[in-house]
Image 1 (cartoon, each protein chain N blue to C red):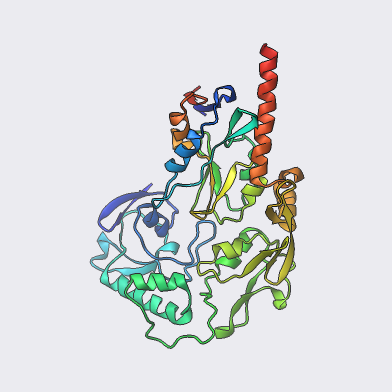
Image 2 (cartoon, rainbow over the protein chains, first blue to last red):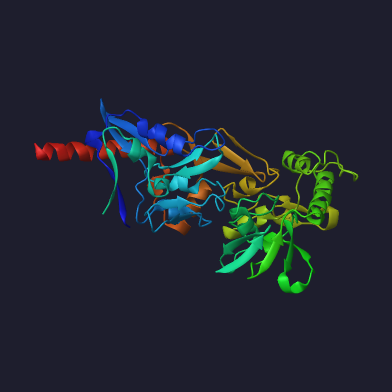
Length: 135
Length: 258
């Protein structure tokens, strides 16, 4: 893994710009996609952006019966191969962090793929609570 | 790495790949109903027919189903020649006679200029095109709960003896993969019904949203080593739980630095 996606909750102001950036970065057929990142409040006015943690021993990868989820060695992200996905929802049920999602608009399963190496959420974060950097 | 020519353009492909995979990757739109990357190709719908030739064939050419044809070096592929379009039209015409009510096939046929079949339509057709995508995906799962029964025009996809399939886990893979959406299923009052078998659904402990069937969760726990507690909450509540846990860590870290 050459890059690291860093989340700094103390800097997050819960503006949800990342959510918008994500939805627009994954737009298809003139419709925004479902956001893969959510800044959630754990206490009043205290936010933490929740996105896929790209686990080493990922439950979604283990649960997928059709090998649709595979790790991209370049970015370190677990990517979903839409051509192989059957939309059975095993990964959605298995992910302990709730970061595999069902996109009802486009009728597909989605998860964070780090935008293939340049995450839109990190680029748009106004307070730099999300950082994508080289290690 | 091999080089093939698709519609006059030289493209790279990996050895062992099927032609249809390469054609789709190149963004060329050709119809296919029974194709899915998760299952082995069988060439049942025959819509992905293309014309192939080689430089040394001296003008000879043949028509093959691209989903079943492995790429080879020097292959020249044409996806939209008049002959190929004529073949596809005939197949779509026949499919339309077989499933007159299927929206997917109606749409595909319309693209090829067929609005009404020239054959006699099948009375009481159920829109199943006998592509076996459902039985093949069930085989990938290692369950094979459904298969084709009877012969000839009476052939249907059904569970053993038309009863509740004992091996079915209610994962809906068959219903999701079906190209013409003919496998009916319902989720109602905490029960999922598919193939006339009833399944208990796991509901989220906090919000009550349905997650998956109990049998499916058991399958994932046994075969895939997923811990039981992962299935207790729905994805929204799990995300909230993650936020709370992360918040705890942040607060503890901040207190420690003070």
